Image (cartoon, rainbow, N blue to C red; front, side, top):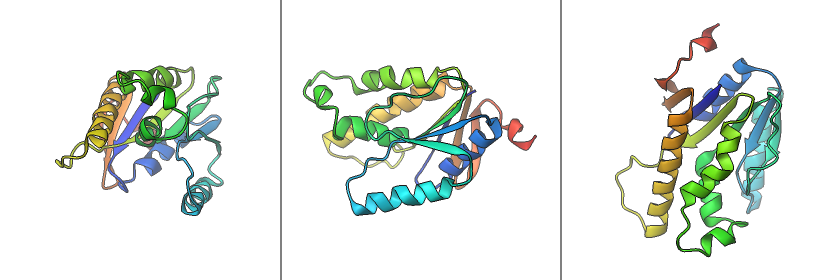
Amino acid sequence: MKAFIIGGSGNGKSAFAEKVAAKLGGKMIYIATMPIFSEEDIKVVERHHKLRAGRGFETLERPQRIEDVPDHGETVLLECMSTHVANVMFGDGFDELRSNPDTNYAEEIWKEIGPVFEREGNTIIVSAEVTMDGNTYDPATEQYIRTLAEINNHLADAADLFVEVVYGIPLVHKGSIAFLEE
């Protein structure tokens, strides 16, 4: 199964994605994309590890490139596409993309993430909804929002299951979550 889970900050999308992963079962790999810049970030990562402790996930920290993703039938949960897009556009390790003013970030990100989404096992990708606040931002942030929206649209289109989590309530836009009740 290819699942795409989206929602606003703090709406329960990660918990829902973990529930989907646990139900799909098998060996579970958690790909964490959060970069670490400070002691505060270290505490957040440690908290995330504690929250997942005992749930059967092996965690792969991938704050830069999404690489070396197992492809032997595992259930992979990638958290979070919105962070990964920010990493690519603004973080370390992607200078070659930023040095070219003609870079199509969505295209470059899909080259990297498409194979993860199309791998043999179950893949669940979590992302944040950032396009609905109606505000106008500086050009770099606007480009980030457009890029993330393009990636999110592509993921929604390619997914077998597309769920938006709103205030902890899963709203199914594509596929079915009946398997969660079995």
